[in-house]
Amino acid sequence: MDMKLEVVVLPVTDVDRSKHFYTALGWREDADIVFGETRIVQLTPPGSAASIQFGRGITDAAPGSVRGTYLVVDDVEAARAELAGHGADVTEVFHRDATGAFAPGIHPDRGTYSSFASFSDPDGNTWLLQEITDRLPGRVTGVAYGSTAKLERALRDAAAAHGEHEKETGQYDEEWPVWYAEYMARHQDA
Image 1 (cartoon, rainbow, N blue to C red):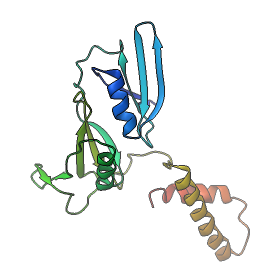
Image 2 (tube, rainbow, N blue to C red; image 1 turned 60 degrees about the vertical axis):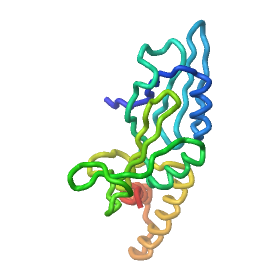
Image 3 (cartoon, rainbow, N blue to C red; image 1 turned 30 degrees about the vertical axis):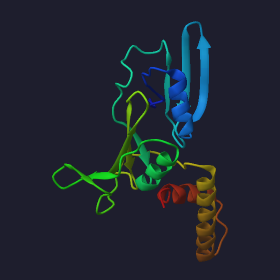
C-alpha cells in the first residue's frame, strides 16, 4: 500500500501574516477555508507534491515549534537566491565537512545531499534547503518529471534516440511505447 506524505501542519500565531509570507515566496494557494471557528489555509511550494497547512483550530502545537522541514532543490545557490529575492531571510549556503560539522559554502565536491541553506517563517518554524542532484539507489520509484516542459524535453529526447534505434535495426519498432518507457526511466535525471 502506498502512503504519501501530503501535508505538514505548521503552528502559527497570525494566519494572514503567515499566508502573506508563504504566498510572497511563490507558494500556490490551494485553500483558505473557514467553517465556524476553524480556518485552514493550505499552500504548496513550487514543484512539490506535499503541502503545508496552518490556520485557526487545527493544532495545539506552539507557534514556531516545527523545526528543520526539508525542501529539496536541484541547485541550493539558485534556490537561496530566489527565496532571498522574495524577501526570505535565508542563511548563506553551508555543508558538512569530513568531521560532520557544518562548514560555510557549497560542498567542495558539490556532492548530492551535501549542501544546505535555511530560513524561518515569521513564527520561527524552520526550513532546510537541501541540494539533491542524484538520488541514492532505490530512493525513487517510477518516473517523475517536475514540469510539463521537462516531460516534453524527455519525450523529444526519447523520440530522437528511438529514431536512431530504428535506423540501427532497419525496421519499424511496434513496441516503441515499451522502448520509450525504458529509455525515459533510465534517463529521467539526465
